[in-house]
Image (cartoon, rainbow, N blue to C red; front, side):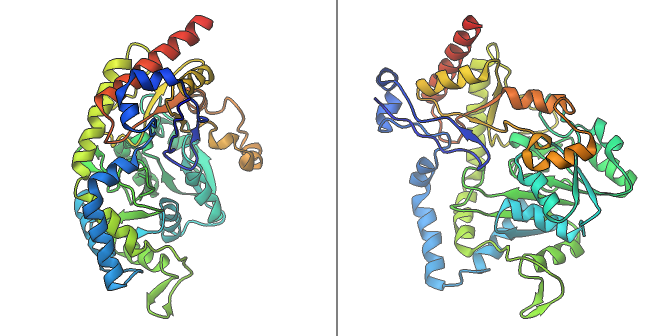
Length: 410
């Protein structure tokens, strides 16, 4: 029996058990060529292509020995800032730390509230809670699964300190409308762009669409390192200075501490990896777009395929469809050797850790129906720049077959 293994796109995603049919690998030559494996996100293929560049960059760090805040960190920050058009970029140890540092720099703390989405990876709400504030959830819009601006004002109270939209699956949220509401109420906006670095909103780079933008370089992100990493973007000099100090134990200069911070630095080796990958990032984005277009052409009459709105682009961190009878479809795809993931199966207001908050706020199942429906139906398919046409065709045919079987049994 052939074995197929997957690499999930995020720690919070659900990956199906290993399984497969021998006949599937025989039918599709690409599986034989890949030694019987198919990856949810093929980082090994990317490394084979970039090996010389990545190795050279990493070797340079080994030789100069400046492993913390070395010259590659500053070089990366300058290139990332230039790419999104922001005045400042501060790298950090993870996308989660980026959210934490943004909230800390804005002074969000006990007694404050932050309006955000319940349909996201847990870190979005977790960091709000970690600084002592309260996440206040607003439902998503159904087209792109992002925070619905129509519900934000009703959630704003005198305690609201910021709005934290998530640019989910690679596509920016409706940032102009969100920024307009924030300006009216004198609130900061933090864009959680962990999945959307490389995407555009009305010609502007995701990450540079609000007061502070945060992104992640988790390995399977569109731009990923070989460990954890993240970055923050801002055009505010004061916030940039605060975040730079906060990520390094609150130091304004060596051994002079002006605030309580964290050890949130991006190490130099990860910066070296990112610099090598950044050289081909535009090409990889184009390949993601090509794969997404091929999926949509083959699946749009069988399932609900992703919708990219006309005034923006997607970085295609995931290719996420909606299906009825998801459990049956997952099982059938696993049997066919197709790795899948669910991003995300449980909205934040239904997470056990937020049970008390939900009681206080009067939230229950049914409070955020669009998010809850999406959580029950979404299914992410293999997505990375090195998908071949044959792989997309094979996955698409397996999805169509699985959906057909589920419908017939229904």
